[in-house]
Image (cartoon, rainbow, N blue to C red; front, side, top):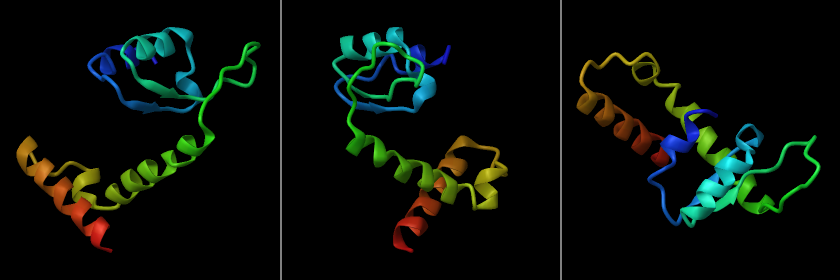
Amino acid sequence: MSVAPSLLSRIRRAYVIGDRGYASNELREQLKAQKCRVVIPCKVNRRRKWRWSRALYKKRHRVENFFQRLKRYRRIATRYDKLATTYFAMVCFAAVLIWLL
């Protein structure tokens, strides 16, 4: 959570979907200032709850499933490639295979 504001600082006008671990007022306000639509459910113990899109949040699992399928390729999971370009090429190749199958 401490690195999230700096990682998301360049994102503009996008949907940002995250889980309850990223439900902080500071992060939400930063993303709203960047004109992003924030889809992060609030924590259960929060007094003042905010609104969020359940339909968009349900689609989050597709991204998580994709990364889990990528990790099935041993070469990607263990990072055999030394160069970033060859590693990226393998990730692209595996993504195409996942998309075709």
